[in-house]
Length: 304
Image (cartoon, rainbow, N blue to C red; front, top):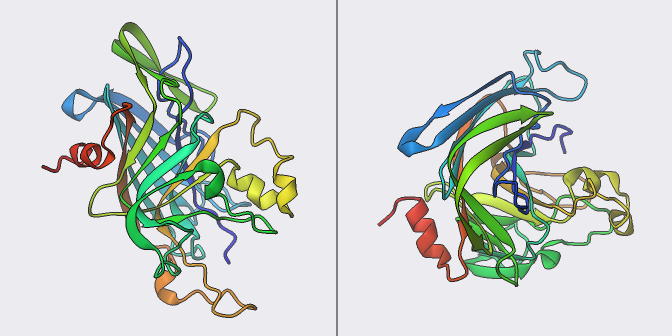
């Protein structure tokens, strides 16, 4: 298993107070971006574009052995479209995963998805997982392996919904105008002239129909999973102490291997080799209590 972890922390979704927006984009990928711009986008959106250079531990981000990443957020009043492109140097080892990581409000306790399930499955371990529409508690998404590690993934996901059993836990604020403030690696929309506040029970993550995703939802950050040597130690790690959930939406995920018990033995077609350019997108939108996830997914992807 290679030691390079390629995760793009694209944004945070946080519970609202009277003075915050329903979405707080957070760019914390290897420090501050090498370039940052924002302005009018397509369809009347606010477009935020950030470019990063990632490098393995011990190397400068200016190194030729880096990963170049560009993240574009098109922020609408009712949704956010995120487009990511990345290219990794051929000198790097195979990558475990290529995708985005989001910190989500800890009030979410339920996950619904359309994809493979109901159990944990990965690209090379999914034959027994049937396509369907599934629902699970966030707690049950975690697999308590004796030695904590990546777990709970669901393969070939078209959409996923994070929600709370009790509605009206998150507010969405609409605004007529606003500005962006970049402070300590966090890009936050500062809104003015609020015109409406509507209660929404959750969030949908919609993947384009031509590109399914590997999705997992965890109470523990991957750094905590790596730090803990036993399951009981996870409860002692605070993961920042804010009670956030950690949502991974991976465009690519390497196989787990395990044909035998003493070597990784990942088959070549399940290894992510650097050198190619990857591009993918996803859409985030708040959901109402009477939502139809399939219909909303199709609407977000502009499918009749």
